[in-house]
Length: 497
Ligand code: NAD
Image (cartoon, rainbow, N blue to C red; front, side, top):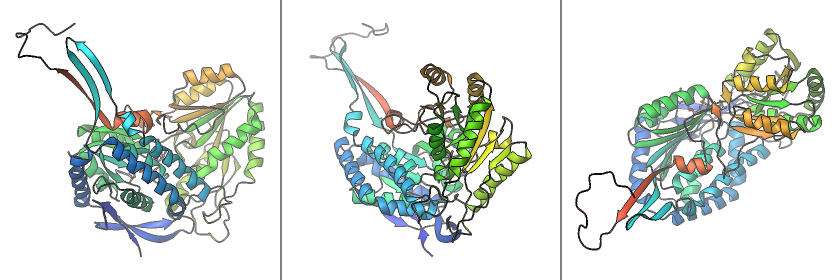
């Protein structure tokens, strides 16, 4: 059986303390093994990155950008291969995999503007014959730790920008779908990236802990669940590193009584069930204002859900695929059961769907649950499955209070025809990414992505302008060239104009 290894200093290796099964989630079969790196393997990758940094930090930004231009072309040329790999290990349908890859490529395009982004700031004559400028210097070796649900896009949020800023990188992808990152590494090498600038180590907590504590790693970008994000942030910062750790979510959509209901239902069908709800921006809670809006919404949504097609990635007419593991499938089914036990109404039950030919796959069908209330387990926790909850609120204020009281603050949206209500909502809601009649307000690559509250630990979001700030440190240089010798004696008062 094929073992998925690591990519260190320009070569693949499958050094492993042990191996772990990789599944095809549509069939439930083990298809590969992934090498789980021990401390020594991770240290080898860090050492390679540290050595490569010596010359990479001084490589002209325009040359670094040219490699990214080539890389973007190679990503496009190999798009089908990348999407097939995502389908095999993650289960994502090809149209959805292509969507994630395209959003990832957007970040490579942004990274191509490095020479412009790294220009810095200059002021002439800040004092008599004194000039001053600020430049953005790279940090050194940076690490990226990524989740299973976007095996191409989330790594692409991180390393293209980190690399064009002059850093070297060690990526620790999810061990559940480990192959995509290795293909990205090979394409970068083909694009001309020097050995050691980008390294991939597959592994688990041992690899992560090594990256978080090794003094040679200057910064850590993490994306994953909130408990691990919090742990990563606390550990990395306690070891003196810069850290951004993006966590989980519970994204609410407010459906106002004046909303275009057909539009809201169509938008939410994609946003709740797309990618089996395994998206940190999935809209998993519809808060309907007024019983009339709720009844209409439930009626139209349950009708729309009759057309949902769940199945394997091999059939591109499917809307969404299986969940990532059998354990996760049981967990999602458990949330549905708990909702019924705690007093909610299961309107559409997606447990144990029939998927002909894929009886052992990890499938859950689209599920709709009404009369959900704050305090229920299904409401408080992130389900990460194709489950849409409906909460009934008496007013917009009450709906907004629910969102503001929730521990997560990643994304949210409002469906309304009232501009004043939409403006009030976007001004006052305690969430980092807001949509107005837009269900998945994922910022484009030249803005930045980041939630609030327990959806992001750290001060800067990922990619875009925040990404450039995260992957560089500012140095300000103040310079004078006296024309002949020392022209002033010692000055004891604080220098000022
Ligand atoms: P996860 O937290 O289980 O794993 C993320 C990474 O952390 C993986 O690389 C994994 O190997 C590592 N890891 C897991 N347990 C660890 C431990 N105990 N110690 C150290 N490292 C550990 O997340 P996941 O299940 O892969 O991904 C789904 C989660 O990611 C969801 O909560 C989702 O909302 C979140 N997510 C957030 C965003 C965002 O931008 N905020 C984007 C995508 C996914």
